Image (cartoon, rainbow, N blue to C red; front, side, top):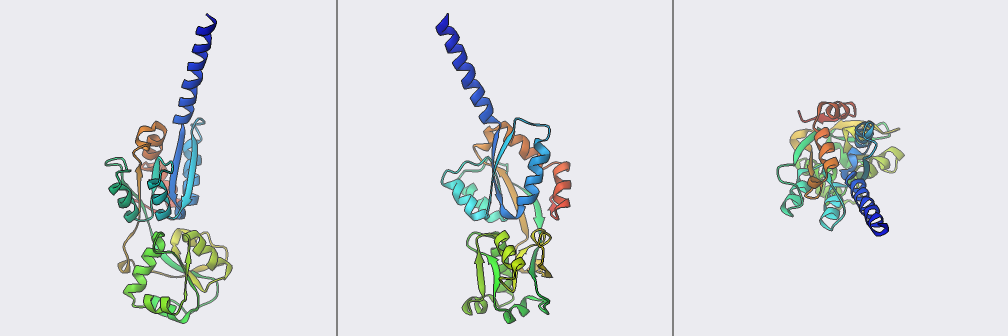
Length: 250
């Protein structure tokens, strides 16, 4: 009887451990959605005390490569469809789960009073921050716009471009006055303490700023992750996204 009791207790402990693990949701989210996702996590878990979110906020490219290398992730949100496609091709995204969650706008911000109101005027500045185009979607959009304006090669040759690890770092550089200006998303610009929007980049000059979200193949097996994924596409989440300056994809 004693052995039976011990075995029963052990089985209960194992089942409890599995249940707790199933309530953990790993999120890999583009840095520009840090604040809104913290709000979404808080709102969602308000009546779901057993769910534990483990978020990772960074550049979309860095997160995608981390997932490819085995980092735990149940839900992936990118600031550019390119990196979602990267994981789809690696067969690491649950089939038919990728969808556009919201849209944003690209703007140029700076602290000092400036007459810079167009892309062409950037050649008169000395230091311009942007996320590294190799991994940061905001930097990729900025590079597209500058290439269309015919100024990217000149700015690069003159070493006026300051590469940041993600869009939030580019914003910090501009807010501290460490650069003359920076390319960031409109939603990030609203968080600046001293920098202000100098101009909004014409959307015709770059791909539309879209945020695809999806369940990973492992996330599709996590009921809590699926529940949060469904929540993100609902009316309550859309309202939160709007409050933070994003344009929900209805």
